[in-house]
Image (cartoon, rainbow, N blue to C red):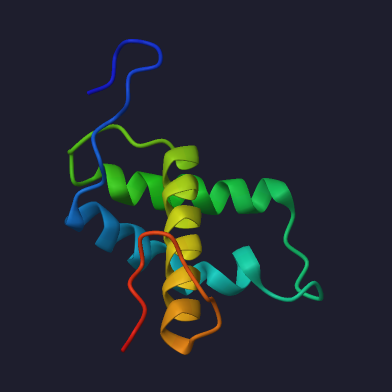
Length: 100
């Protein structure tokens, strides 16, 4: 567990990632939906806190809501790059091989 300021926490385990995805997908419309769905920043923080609580039930490390949110954003960014590479939309994506 990261105890010293600036020390990195261990990477998310496969089980933690699964809990993260299982927590976000049912709430996706509230978190990222169209503007006509009015969800306050306070409500979104509450959703992320609930997701983090579910991830913590695995007992690997104490993940805060910000850890979960940042990991989710990393996954979104990575999947977008992969999709672009697979569809030929990107001429070069660093670290991602293009489909033959």
